[in-house]
Length: 124
Image (spheres, rainbow, N blue to C red):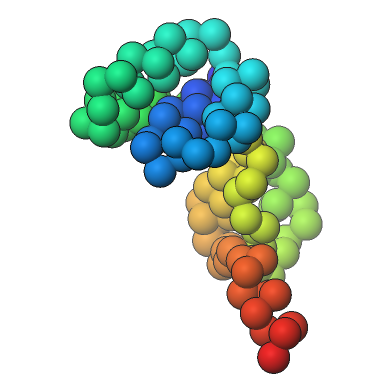
């Protein structure tokens, strides 16, 4: 359920005008989006920014209400990491947020590895 909601959120994000020239990204997102979100995305795009923010906010609230995955929490408890590092959220409908939420619930420090920062450091 959470994955389907996240795919819908990703699709709604691509309805922003900043992605007008990113047709390939929007098409890829649409192809992976659960059916109910495609007509919603079209309506949001036609209505403008306020509707995208409203629809995304509602879907985000529903997604946050989905219970955490107990298997991920159990995995982190068994591994007992000192820190959980996430890579950029580039995959549509990513489950990385589940690991972030579980780590935070277990009070494990978290961090985000940003690719562009790594590249800029390597070029110096």
